[in-house]
Structures are given as structure tokens and as C-alpha cells.
Amino acid sequence: MLKNITLGQYFPGESLIHRLDPRTKLLATIALIAIVFVSQGFAGFLLIAAFVIACAASTGIHLKFLIKGLKPIFFIIIFTFVLNLFFQTSGNVLVRLGPVRVTDQGLRMATFMAARLILLVVCSQLLTLTTSPIALTDGLETLFRPLQAIRFPAHEIAMMMSIALRFIPTLMDEADKIMKAQKARGANFETGSLIQRAKAMIPLLVPLFVGAFRRAEELALAMDARCYRGGAGRTRMKQLKFQGIDLLAALSLAALLAAVILFNHFKVF
Image (cartoon, rainbow, N blue to C red; front, top):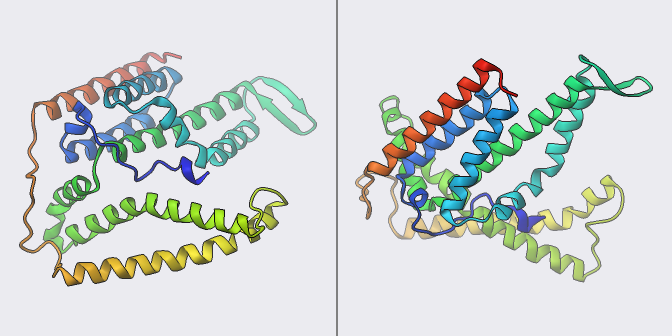
């Protein structure tokens, strides 16, 4: 399960998506999420899915890798599907199990919500998979900079978010090592009741938290030893600059939004 977490991982590349300005990718991700919520039918979802798959294919990231990233939230997807399936009672009854009824509207709503959740996760994955932590930090800081007028700590917030994303894969690797060590000593994480499996996670979580705090202290000492004092007077090796491909990305998203709105207006599927 831990190996299936793709959030925070970065795959270097020279594709158009990789070469986009990080600010463009951040805003594009927000726009894609908004378009997912704007869509009111499966036709819009299919169009968004085709757009995301095309973007992933252009970066060289295999579709199977994106699907693998859905496994950690598989339970949430199933729970969302079941919740909407049984609590939506309007429409024609398809199956009746005592007091429980499954209707066509409930099935549609359950599939719709599960598909929306999957698209939201996949869209977010593309951002971290194609943007390095340093570029992500610079992009976030630049976008937050206008808020400095109200004393918003733009650089500090961007740095914290970048460090958090950067250390997700590191913590997952450390958790995997601890889990293997515990299994070698007879620990069982895969069988038993839900309560038993939760209790079995305690020997994993305690050393993981201790290691995380130790790593955080070492990072703080390293930053202090290098006289890190925040964003004041800081220079960048690469200056952010919008290019033609950023305009092309914006036009592509605008066309996608227009198509989804048209599908909604004509109630396509």
C-alpha cells in the first residue's frame, strides 16, 4: 500500500508539461479541479479524462502509474460509491433488498461522485509528478506574494508546503523499512479484525513519528547552519518567466471549460 502513494514524487522530463511555468501548472490544476466540479454529466468527465490522459501521455508517465496512485484512497472511493448508491432513493427501483432500495438515479449519482473523486486525485498527481519541489516552492511564493501586503508569510508557507511534499516519499520508504522489520519479528498487519489491525499499526507509527521528528530537527539545524533567514534578500538560480507554451496551456483549458459548459447546456449524457 505504501508503495502506491505517488503524491510528492517527481519524474524529471523535457516534455511541454514539464517545461511549463510552475505558476501555470498550479493555476491549471486549480482550474482543472474547478472544471471537474462544473461538469454535470459523464460526457464532461470523459472529455476531462481524455485531456488528462493526453497530458500524462505527453510527459511519458504511464497511465498505470496514475491508476496505482488511486489504490491508497480505494476505500474512500468505494465508501463514496456505496453511500450515494443506498441513500439516493429517487428514481426507478432496480434492486430491492428489504428496506434497502437501489434506484437508477442512485446508481448514476454513485458512479458520478466516484468518477469525480478519481479525476480530482489524478489531476493533482500530474502537478507533483511534473514539477520539482524547488519550482513548486518558487511558484507558490510568487502566487502568494500579493498577500504580503496584509503580512501573509508567503515564503514561509510555500517552503513548508514544498518540504511536506518533498518528504512524503522519504517517509513512505522509512515506513516500509519499519514494516518489514516488524514483520520479521512476527508482526501481522494484514489479518485479523479492524481493531486488531489498527492496534498492530502502533509499533509502526511510533518509530515513524520519532524518525520524522528527528529528521525535522536535523533539517532545521542544517538550514540554521547555512544562515537561512527566510525569503529576505533571496535570489533564484532560475527566474520564472511566462512563455508561449503557458499561453497555449491557458487556451487549452479555456477550450476544455467551454466544451464542458456546452455539454452541460445541452445535457449531453
